[in-house]
Image (cartoon, rainbow, N blue to C red; front, side):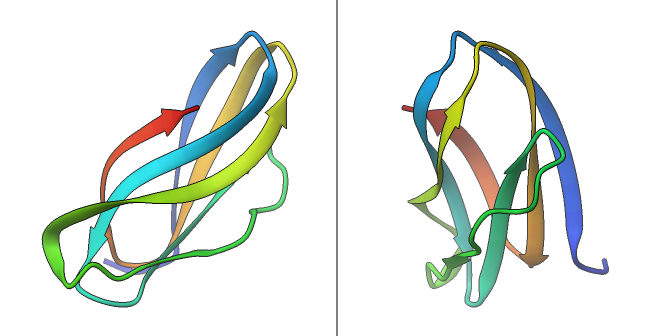
Length: 88
């Protein structure tokens, strides 16, 4: 598998400020970032949990979204496993 990899997902919100939490794992040196609505990727997030099945929660981004439909992309820069996303 070659990197970087991008995946996208559509979501609909009522708008507001969100903290996106991501459960992920990587033996070492995993890196990802998020982007919204074809914007530039936000800051890289480093993931090193010591094992491929040892998941931890990471803050992927803090964003303000307008009401309506949005597209979130995850940019995987270095290999990692993803479990879930949570918008708070």
